[in-house]
Amino acid sequence: MESVLYRRIKELTQEKHESLAQVERTLGLSNGIISTWKTGKASADKVKLIANYFGVTTDYLLGNSDETHGDNRPKLQKIARNASKLDDSDLSMLDGIMEQIFKEKFDDNDK
Image (cartoon, rainbow, N blue to C red):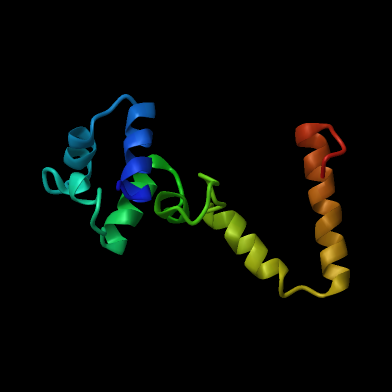
């Protein structure tokens, strides 16, 4: 039985019109290593490397999620971390600023 990891990597390579060998060469992986993941396990650093290459989450590759894209943008993560430390007054001010930005950017009510 094929592992979820192997199956999803194959699907992603097909979407990019690449072969497994091309991905391995591009990422500097050993020739044929991805095929060994059909039934075996890949190291965490290799899974992360593949996920970054395809722009998907490691959870998606490993079958822990069907969502391909997590929110891995560093600036957005920093905002979320810092916002969690704000008091209610500061959060209200931040909400107002964000609402104005969204209004200018997207001109809709989906905030």
